Length: 118
Length: 114
Image 1 (tube, each protein chain N blue to C red):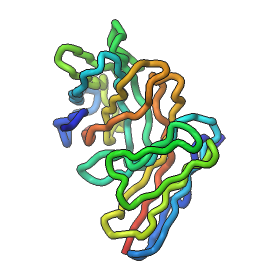
Image 2 (cartoon, rainbow over the protein chains, first blue to last red):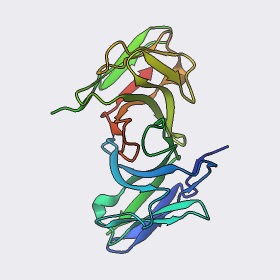
Image 3 (cartoon, rainbow over the protein chains, first blue to last red):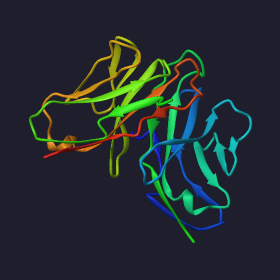
Image 4 (cartoon, each protein chain N blue to C red):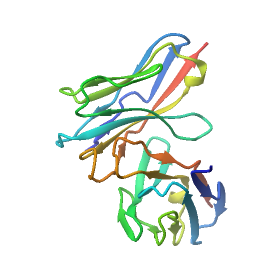
């Protein structure tokens, strides 16, 4: 069974608008972490944002925020004020286990391709 | 400050040949990973290593061999390459002490097997 599901293979958004990329996860571990990465056409993987399962507030990093709904097991990435440079593949990943001392073996979703139109 | 270096960046070889992809890090991160990326599959874990001399299989290990005699190096070997192993390969590292820290990825190796 997929531990990380990204149901949107492709998304389109108009420049300057907000966009939400979906990510749902499956785990029975009460302690876990969720990551989002961006992969532009040049190929490198860029870390965007992290959310821990025990974090009380939704994570934010500049124009990126994470809509974390623990009961629904969803961790959607919200990009505000989209820019042309946001066009890329976006991957959601999950690591299960405690924040310290546990193993570190993330599982990745299949990704969502975002295209920002001018 | 290269951080993590993969070599070669591009490789073309023939079926049945042995090929080794290199990965070197300068951070002394305990964890190192090898992923393959194929269209429609995202990133799939081939092998990982939690420390020197400790390696373990990921999701798709068949046909691959790894070793980690030194913390900084984690080579991936395809012992007898097949066309299905044509892919983009990423090496990654992580500081295993703090699991809220992200993985760091190399630039990838684009491998074509003819």
